[in-house]
Length: 193
Image 1: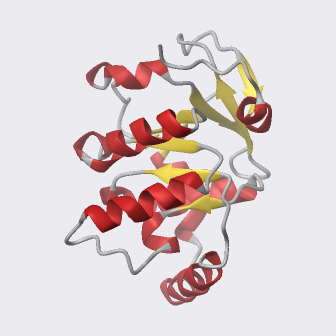
Image 2: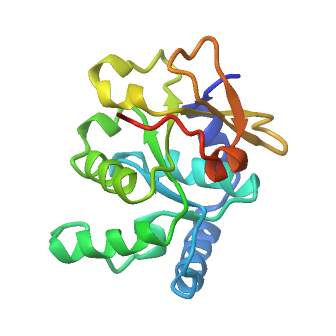
């Protein structure tokens, strides 16, 4: 099963007008304040905003609810991050049943993503890596050795009715696949030792 690419996720939001998009985000933020649970906490780099919007759309098309800090909590101050920001993220992570670590070219520069991954793994364990492959090449997991410990997310039918699977194998070329829901509720997850 293939990983998703940058162009696939960008295509998911290419047809949305900027005005509609801003209105959608405002309505989404207002309704998510009332939400107290999410299926997925999306850990990502702020440099990947357009990619993250496409990833969110794909995940929502699979029927999942997705928490994204700058969409669901737009009042969080991203310019001057503080302990209050970390507390708000901890609260939100406890409201989510899984964390997907969006691994991209930008994620390697993030200081928050490794913290989110470690915190969530410690409190819940339902952590997987969602690689977004650049159109111009490949992602190198060798630079982020700790990510090799976690299963990877694969999709099929991205353009129509996407389905999400978890590759539980440490070797990506020969995977042991489960549906996302079976993996999330199962006791047999590969956990870091």
